Length: 594
Image (tube, rainbow, N blue to C red; front, top):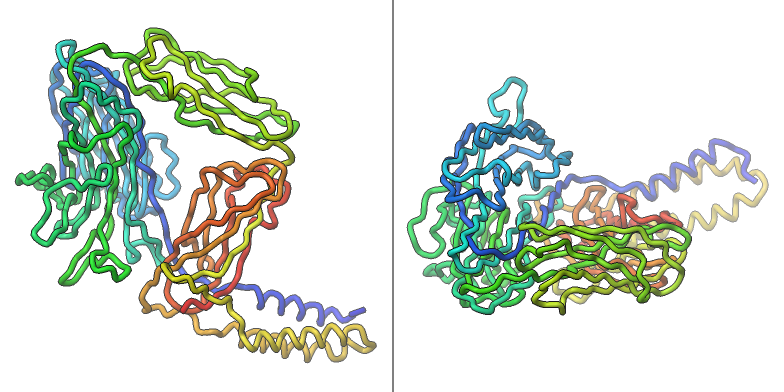
């Protein structure tokens, strides 16, 4: 037995050296998906009003409404300067009410504020009750210029989207989606940067009967003239093709993408498109910051052949279908089922996402929850012009494989085929996620990268074996110190593999990761986070989780420089899941990236 405390101290130092990673800097703020928040059908129209172009506050928007709107949202884009600067924004409507937002950068938790990247704010405020028929005034100001303020505080735009009923008008089906996506290349997200080239917004439940026309309205921020970008609906490019074959939706001139002159709008673009020829029952709107036209693995943003934007932020997408006159009926659907805390012996929560793609039902809808066909919950929900509702009930599940179903019922529903959704789940002991990093490889290359195997580390292993023999001998303490000192020196040399070059080019890699759930219950939605040299480099959300006692492999794209890197992968870092063991949620390993 070792009795020399100095020897134990040295042994601890060896272990620390062997496992201590180097550090480099990266910042990633990947944006918030642009998703529907309002949808439905009415006799009437959607009206748009706005100021476009980066401006010093206060910024006023004056407009006239033909009648009081049934819904109205105010959008204000504010530039923060960086994600670390904080300040204030204020929205005043018709001098009736002032709403104040404390903008907190990467610590912001405001419900109405979408903040992404390096302090790009998109404020979305429900002003339905404050709008009126006739003249309206929306004023936006910020803390720019105030003593002690560091927030840049300039305003990209102020936009009002209002739904107005008109009994003499034909039917109008509508979807309004909002968020703050962050599309960017490698050079605009940190030292070990991520890359995000596109995002997609989905509009479900379109009724094409009696269709006369369809229109799409979108808003982008942080756009740059002369850098191409693209907008697609169901795979079809929108906008005018330029002589070189590219398109430039975000060119800092709003309402110009279809060929007109438009209006100057610095760092912001609002556009309207006729999409009648392209709409389907399910519509995908895709924003692309550029395209790799020469297939060299990158989207170039400078030089003689520019292929895309450095960065841009899709913020708003509104689609409307104008139809012939006719009866407006509700069309309710169960869009999804979310489950939390579904473990044996515990009370779970089941939440149904209810959508209405049609008119407002005359009476509240009924939402019914069943487990293997047996009802365990029933709730009434009143839907309005926003067409979105979330309904939750408690559930005490039995153990085993269970089929959950949720049904929504309303009088006069025009399509009952989408009134029910099902989800299978295994209930048992809490889940137990375990992470395994497989060999990473260059994107598009099947050849894996070998994990780092230094010859010096091999020497350390040999000495360690010899040391294990010595410490069983008498007088081991007399020789432990010099041997351990030698191990420290060798370990240090082993860690001196050339680090990634600071001025090297970034390369796209694929990182295969296997996530196993060793528990008795399904692990529901969670995030997987990748760190490169101690700094966050990528995040992937696993929306459908991992079923009990099974595994799945995911491929995470990462961008870094060639050289030696410590790679760490963490499953469910914020601990949203209740697990029986969290020690195996993390794996860390060194690789030399070619």
